[in-house]
Amino acid sequence: MRIKKGDKVEVIAGKDKGKRGKVLSVIPKEERVIVEGINILHRHMRPTQDMPQGGIIENEGSIHLSNVQLVCPRCDERTRFAAGYLDDGSKVRVCKKCGEDIDK
Image (cartoon, rainbow, N blue to C red; front, top):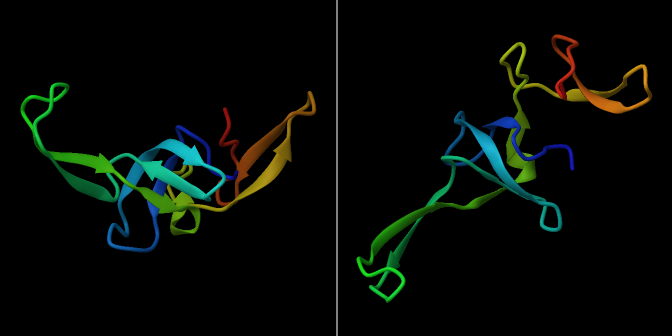
């Protein structure tokens, strides 16, 4: 997966276009991500023993990976990235705009 948990992303398509948030989880099998504050779903819950209050619960829904783009933590712009290698041979993501490592 190109996007990882904890990355800052911007939505580039859909009803939340232009909003930014942190990736809470990644679902590789379905190519979807759950982003904090994006695609809020409302669920009407009846009172139960676990939840005596009941009411309307808000949760983040998943969004397709193609509808989000990574935001570089250094230049604070949404960007594509390339694969770079450190001196010890480990692979890192490098911002195409500023050239800095994203995985620091």
